[in-house]
Length: 215
Figure 1 (cartoon, helix red, strand yellow):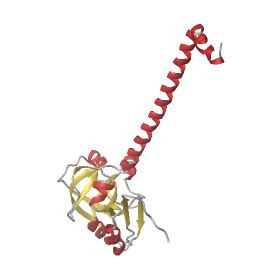
Figure 2 (cartoon, rainbow, N blue to C red):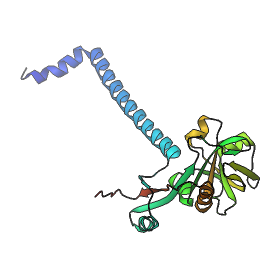
Figure 3 (cartoon, helix red, strand yellow):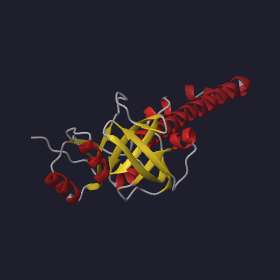
């Protein structure tokens, strides 16, 4: 015996069964670790997809920007897309209804439905002042179709709209017996002014790369 290393083949011959079990345990351990990390990666991807679907794919929200700031945001080369956004009755404290169902009303630009949230499931964005897009939940609750006329009851009066399409539900509309509605930005501002409330618009921005400077 020249060295202790020469004992390895001798031990391997004597303990063939034990060595096979050791190799088998190592292989199983590697497979288990690989499977656990693969499942963790799959869970992260699924959670990311769910969050984007429910809450949108954007990076910052700017509160009460001026028209000049909105134009500057749109001209930035690192801004992939942006949309104005505002809403009424998010806390369900006021009398907004559609066919007797409590209603949450939001307003924004086309990008919020097609790029930021990507949840336009049927029809199209409401381009006209008398058009409205409803949540998928409202389609089930009220048995409505595209092209049908509906009346939105608000504290400022009743407003008639034609359904232009249906989109994904926000969390509040899936957790309760609530109807979600979406208007073009201009009609949504008109509706808020009819109610005589101050507008507090937001802009949602999605960046190709993050570059936010705070002074």
